[in-house]
Length: 169
Image (cartoon, rainbow, N blue to C red; front, side, top):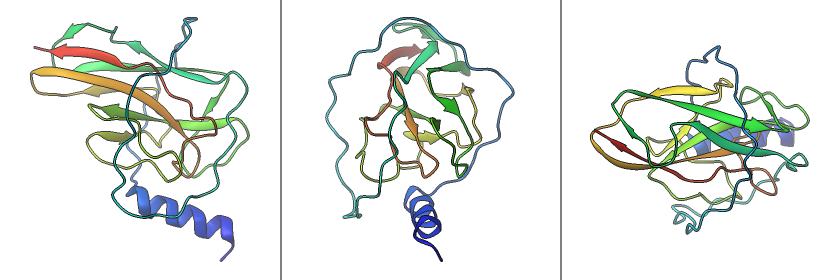
């Protein structure tokens, strides 16, 4: 088994990955500049070795097209993912300047040196999806996108969106 194959298997096992069903919706783009959110890193749950990180494409960025920050929505509601200067690819498919979306729901940015966790708070879109119908109970939620490479590991530097806060009625 080669290192790259072994690292891919280890990355998927650490992330507990499964690829959700893809959608055919294209990614939308805006021209606003993202700013880094003031968040603490997620607490480490296990001492996992750092894996090699993929270089981020020049000028790559992620953003949430909808819902707008501060929106009040009814569940289920659509979340549309946006990206620029990076190709959205399926997990496990390695290509230059590419990656796939992860949606963080009420979660801090994770440890960037290991695969992104896979849970209700760290949702993987390894089928190259660019939107999702999200069903959440009434309450206030934060949403944030984070790109991962073919191993679900954040790029160097990481590519993530601003935090969007929504209220579900």
